[in-house]
Amino acid sequence: MREPVILDEDINLEHNLWGTNYLKYKGELFTGTLLYNDTNPFSYTEYKDGDYDGESVSYHKNGQLAETSIYSNGNYISGKEWYDNGQIKYDSIKKTKWDKDGIVAFENGCWFYKNGIIKEKYEESNSTIFNPNGEIAIITEYHSPCSKNIFYHKNLLSFYPEILIALYPELDSNSHNLKYKVFDWISQVYVKNSKLGERLLTELFVHPIADIQEFAKHLYSFTVRKKKGDNEKTYWMEYNENSKVVY
Image 1 (cartoon, rainbow, N blue to C red):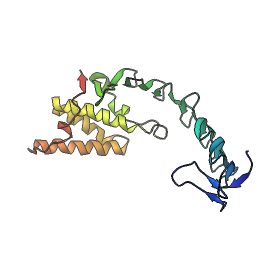
Image 2 (image 1 turned 120 degrees about the vertical axis):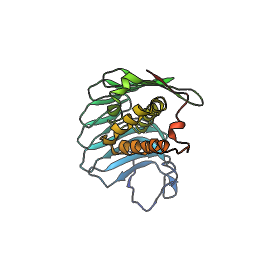
Image 3 (image 1 turned 90 degrees about the horizontal axis):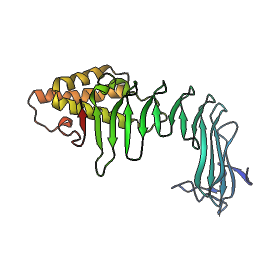
Image 4 (image 1 turned 45 degrees about the vertical axis):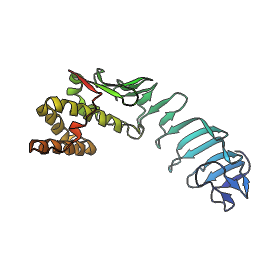
């Protein structure tokens, strides 16, 4: 550890409320190591001239290693994360994420199903979602100002409830985007075939994820109002016109 080593509770510390840099100790930009005594062993971060520089190490409450990071002049260089059971969670150099059971969840720009089949693949100009059989379900082409979704109807029809399950919510902060893509497909289907669109929605009323159930019920309420002659503009009339369904 870089000297001096002080506790984060030291009254001589002056933190920058707007960021991690410019940490001061006794009025001077701090160079040394800051200890956090809320875990055993203590977590710590090394500083140079008031900014992250060197190692930052943290532990879970049960004493298991939680994260190690390397910084240089405030810039993140590399790091690893672990679950509280000791299983590795993330390796920035390998660009890989694992679930708590050691199954590879993300690697080389791809999210995987639990069986190892690719679920989502990200590339520079597009992203692709696959069903559990490995068949293409949705391609999103990135265009400015609006992206274009291409839905492969047959490959979605039997698997869309399973595709909607966020397998790794603690790892994937963008998993909610998948929900909107699938519901965009349902809206496209509804406009062409209202009975099928309604059936796709009602089958989600018993989906294992409560948020999906509620969203499906919310959209289904629009179909009921539309049948009663409500001409209010709804989600179904605002679907992405740049998207298309391949039947």
